[in-house]
Length: 62
Image (cartoon, rainbow, N blue to C red; front, side):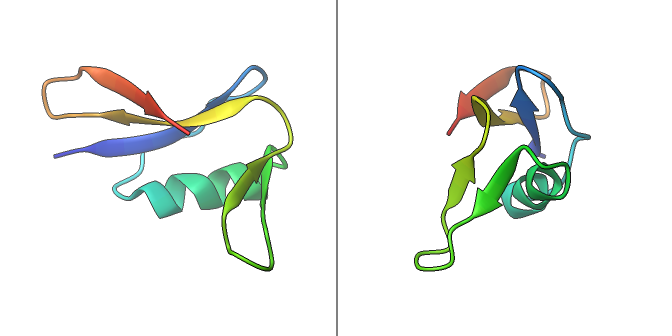
């Protein structure tokens, strides 16, 4: 099972079951915002959505 969290230079969010939930955590914490026009995630500080598979190996995506 793949898990997701946001990671910035300031904060790291909790692991979630969906990337959208990790993005919502980033928005709630003030690390990112959702653009009204396209609904895309815009980081207010350098950040990524990080994914980990069931084996515990992490990969990063923007």
